[in-house]
Amino acid sequence: MAAGFKIAEPLEYHRSFLKENCRPDGRELSEFRTTTLNIGSISTADGSALVKVGNTTVMCGIKVELTNPLVEAPGKGFIVPNVDLPPLCSSRFRPGPPGEQAQAASQFIADVIESSEVIQTEDLCIERGKLCWVLYCDMMCVDYDGNVLDACIIALLAALKNTKLPEVTINKDTGAPEVNLEKRTGLNIRKHPVGASFCVFDDSILIVDPTAEEEGLSTSHLTVVTDEKERLCVVHKPGGTPLSAEKLQECIGRATARQREIQKLVDKVVHSVKTAQ
Image (tube, rainbow, N blue to C red; front, side):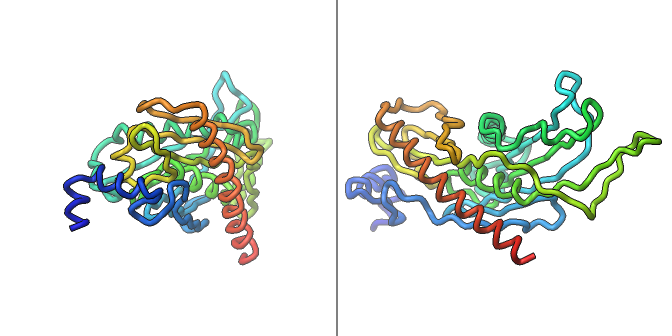
């Protein structure tokens, strides 16, 4: 009977749970799903991470390449993020060029990288005006069950902390770069941005870490990104019903608590991998 009600009236089905301050999967309104992290899982990448937030699974692989810096920014390298939402992860996505949601996610991640200053692009410069690193950060969703933006940020942060750049020297005679793959150094991670996503039901009920079903039924979406200094990096709200100042402040408070929790998880996993080596 409950299964039939859920299919016929999904919104009323969810409302019946929200009235009791809980959700169909058993969580409280302000409860995040279990988050797990694995780093260094792609041996062919220079840095990688696999993140699961509930059923939502995102893999991030980072490849580094040498290139020439831009004339207008001779002392800076590049970070190029890309989010892929293939049909593999959900039937809602179709084969072909990146859809609107994937493009919006890629731009969102680029905004997070720039505004949070997780890495200074100056650190990627090898020789001013001549040589720099470009970091290709590819995030692929393997299983989509809502809140893909939070999972992408965690996967990116963990993969960056796992990335090691080979030593590069410039040959004085030929001027050509010489790469020593045996000698590598980690990236200088300056900030630790973490996202927390929210949905609003019936313009009033706020829930955190929405599933794909909850996202589809909600009237508004919001993602707040903060760093370890409780600095607000990005607030992403793509349309929907407006939020009151009190609700927004509540979201920011929950986002800062989430940041501390995820940074502990990332640091713990990075440390365990280092000790295992």
